[in-house]
Length: 172
Image (cartoon, rainbow, N blue to C red):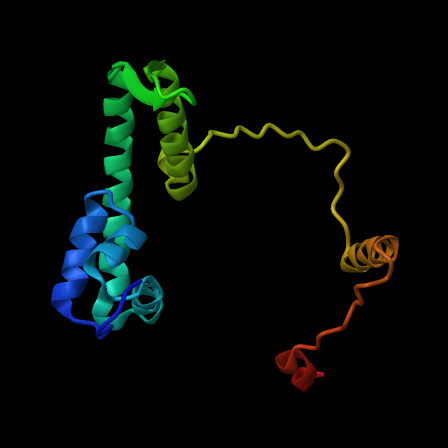
């Protein structure tokens, strides 16, 4: 648990950003340094202390690109894992873990993470093909009537309120 001084300094901010850019998580960095608290760093971002928000955001993006490199590296490595277990009778047993399954889980986790944090780069591409048939322009009155009908279908939770533009009311 982080302890000590949580005061913003350019030096601690630079260190945090460097490690984020190297692909480390904020939680791991704060735990390793012992300070500042993770919530404190997030508050620095939200308050944009000394332009920290832009530095933090850029470091996060670069860190996510490191994760992409990690996916490639992990997918290219197919080494067997061996786990030594002790049976209830005291004898030892070597269990060969399937490295392909282990790598698949890791790669899938990283891909999912990247698709969420960098959707424009790693997200699923969604193509929308829509055709509108029999569309006709509505007058303001027709549109308001249709909105009122839809509101009633939704249980009357929404109410139309007429807004008068002060500029228009002055000219009348």
